[in-house]
Length: 451
Image 1 (cartoon, rainbow, N blue to C red):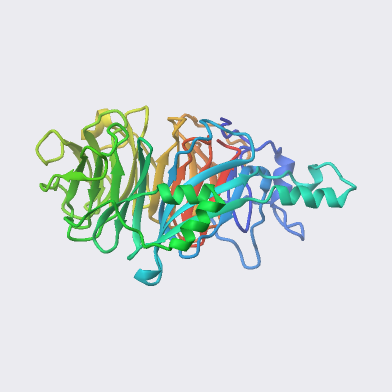
Image 2 (cartoon, rainbow, N blue to C red; image 1 turned 180 degrees about the vertical axis):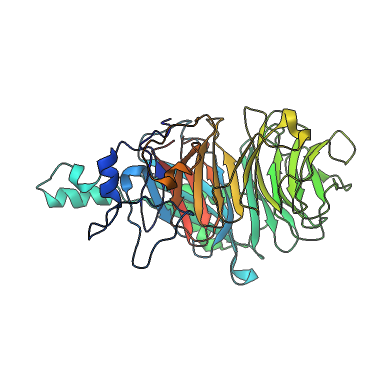
């Protein structure tokens, strides 16, 4: 992974605003900042200075290895990535991926639970001046058609908006856990939808059925809606769900995989809404939670329903999201205060994070560690910015670069923009460095040159 050096630049783009590790020298940076009339050079930094009247951002596609965008009709607040049989760590184009998402439509009856298959995804083309000239225009048109991205959607009607979706696999079953705004947590078998997106014949039959989503299992014991939910990575079928009245319930799968035993005694140390939950990637009985009460708590389901460890003032306002590092004892959190904090669980009781970053200018909406690099994470905010970070990068001498760049933390790799109201992001676990994000304006699928 390339770390930012003293020539790190911020590019300008009407769809995307990003930070990248560049190779430009000082003269090139001056040219980058000059307007049509040759004004003073400057570097645009999202969140540091606003665009002036008449200024607009221009995309630099060389900052991306891949970039695609799509829409699914009604906006999706939440989605998750389904693992596929295409292999691990793949990077060869064209790429494909499977996602499961839930909509937040204008009316309850207009919502859908969606399985989507994106395929024929090619990398970002080089700038025209870098491409070899071709005299045969028909060949170029044919090549463009072959590289056109494709998407199949298998949708079932879901009564009520879907607050959050999380998927897991139990044997041959692909299951989705859905937090619904009507106050229920539901489990759906995705096999019919997965068959449909892989076969035109199956899709035709699927569309003709036009069924409403029927859950394998449903739980109404929360008595109110919620957002927090997570499948255990250690025990297939084990689930934890939290609601807006502060209660957390643990689900244990019964034999057969179509029903669950749910402990009616809630884990209830929080005093306000539970916003996010994360199972430990290494301890089968341990999970973490965060809340509007500004705290982060660590629980063990073998103990009485009180948290083992807690950071009671983890953020100065609501703690919205958390992510548990897969290989290191670190927990990442994001709050309404716009702060990103990294917690060492070996020092958790101290109440002090080992790192804190204030790059976003609005509440954090999603955070996630990279599944393949324990020092890398991504975050999104209500400022419509997605940021990529690498904790292994140390401070460097910024030389004569602009003051705005000197203010940036060296761990910040990249800033991506272009979506409106970004709600959630995930790294693809099988396609290294690839991020998918959902927003009011649709989905982005991209890989930057920084990871």
